[in-house]
Length: 291
Image 1: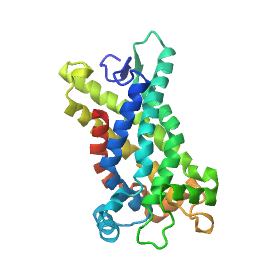
Image 2: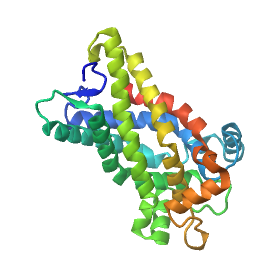
Image 3: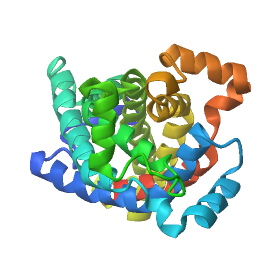
Image 4: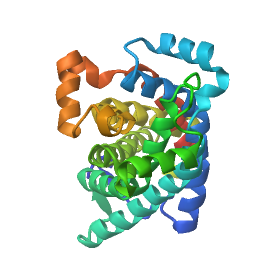
């Protein structure tokens, strides 16, 4: 495009080979988890259990379960999120190259093509992120004050899910996960490209000469747009993954989650926990792009 804002120049600095994607993914994933986990457990509790504000939920966790509870369920994402981000960047590279090969005379991808490549990378990632988040959410929604605890750790949680729902039970909420991942990573790459291209245009500098804090600011804004746009998908996914089994199961399917949530709280019910999520998105997204 003429203004340089709606295109993806190839090759990209972060598309330089699979080893770099693995390293960047691992570093970025650890950054995400360590910064964002306390915000995330508050978000999940608000989505699935509490009809209270973020501060009240955080106070209850601290008072009843102690400060370490804010990192409950950390092992699953800490082990898996680096792999997830590596998969996303590697897949995005592959899909970008494929789309570019369909029009090899063009030096760049259009913004819709960038969104599509990111969305397909998100779908690829959902094969791993779906079960990983299911395990994390069950651990996060379990209060340590409950006796006896349903899950004794990641392995115990996996064992319980498989016993109750079979191996496919690990993929509960997968349709909602796929919708969220497609939209999320489509936005992740395309919005960041727009913002960074704007910074390059204003400063009249190439990508590698843009200051780190400006890259971080572009990442932070991207995170805010991403979560605001896809949050209802995340609420539906979390409710399905936190739901019980057998006679304790509350929701039949994704449509039933949407119907019950709307009946109980209207549109507001699809945005419970958005506040801590947006707070979390600023350091997490900024840190990931900088790393």
